[in-house]
View 1 (tube, helix red, strand yellow):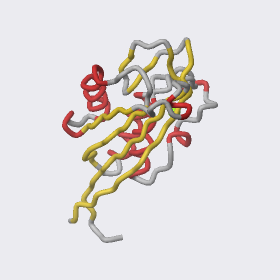
View 2 (tube, protein in one colour):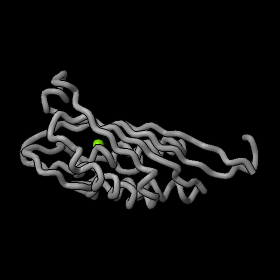
View 3 (cartoon, protein in one colour):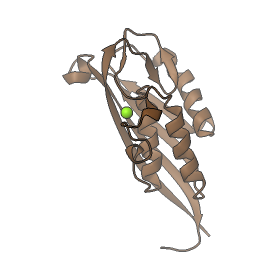
Length: 166
Ligand code: MG
C-alpha cells in the first residue's frame, strides 16, 4: 500500500477590539484588545481547523460550526480543532505536521511561542516537533499594521496508506 500525502491550507482573520481576550492557539495573552467574534476568535485554531479539513477535502469550519449557532457563542475554539482532528482520524489519516504564520502588529509573540506550540500539539495529539508557529508584523501597513485586526495562515500535511491510485 502506498503512503499518500495531502496538504491543506487555512486562513482566518478577526477584528481586534477592546474588552475581548486575545487567545492564540489556546493560550491567553495579556493585551488590551482581543478578537471580535462569535466564538473566542482564536485565529490559530480556526486556520488550523480549515487546513486539516482542507487536506481531507471535507469542507470548511463554517459547515461544521455555523457562527449563527448559539452553541458556539464564546466557545473555546479547541472544540473546533479537535473535531477536525477526529474527522481526519476516522478516515485513516495521521497528521504529519502543521505550520502557522500569525500576522499581528502587537504584542510580540516570541515569549509565548513555546506555550502556543505545546498547546497546539496537545490538541492535535502530535509531537511538538511537528508543530511550527511563526509570527510577524505587517510593518504598520493596512488594518493589521494599524492594530485593528489580525490574521493567521496555516498549512497542514496529513498522510494515509492508500490501497489504490484513485
Ligand atoms: Mg475565525
